[in-house]
Amino acid sequence: MNGRPLEASLRAARAEGRKLLVAYVTGGVRDDWVDLLLAMADAGADAVEVGVPFSDPMMDGPTIQEASFVALQRGTTPPAVLSALRGVDAGVPLVAMTYANLVLRAGTKRFASELSAAGISGAIVPDLPLEESGQWEADAAGAGVETALLAAPVTPDDRLAMICERSHGFVYGVNLMGVTGERESLAASSAVLAKRLKSLTDKPVVMGFGISGPAQAVAAAQNADGVVVASALMRPVLAGASIEQLAGQVAALRAALDGKGP
Image 1 (tube, helix red, strand yellow):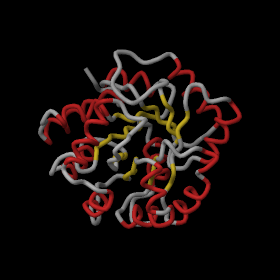
Image 2: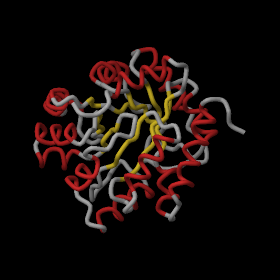
Image 3: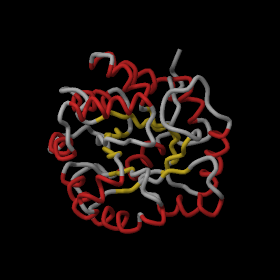
């Protein structure tokens, strides 16, 4: 593995008493997307999730769908995203987020190897069912790529325990039923799911979907180890925000999670 180990890095950050912040950027969304990634890390993200654009991102809401569409219109391909990351050291782990079609088309072993060669140490494949992900998980682990699995508010206890057991890097708790995207408020199911997950595993538990800003990040992290923030960061990127402006948003999230916000 060429990247920084995901779970070990997040455990170390948690041991320092900080809430974890996983920021998201769509690969290829702009010419400077790698610089955006580096700025996120410098501003306090504990890991950066890199979206590998796909034409049918079924789990994503309008903002991330638009970011994927823009990236694809610019000619972005999975090899182009991974090539751009080779030799890049953000100082934090990188996590690829993509869909099963791309993984299976390339072949699980090859795709895992390509992620590792690009310095990516974690992966999220949200539409790959648990019953069908064994080969991917094994090939990913063999390449040093840790597969983080998603858990939903309606996931039954026995399946939740299986997800926690098989997830590596972190367990990704979904705040609400539906697609990604900013919401005016968090669903009550977020806190319930976070508590359920924390009762089942010592692995880092991060909550995502629907977080629109620092206050919601703090609320979502209260019963978990941290949060994933995606749409709230990609919306300004799509609107042309500068690298400095995006870094300021990540810094605000970091400050709030550290209890230093306004």
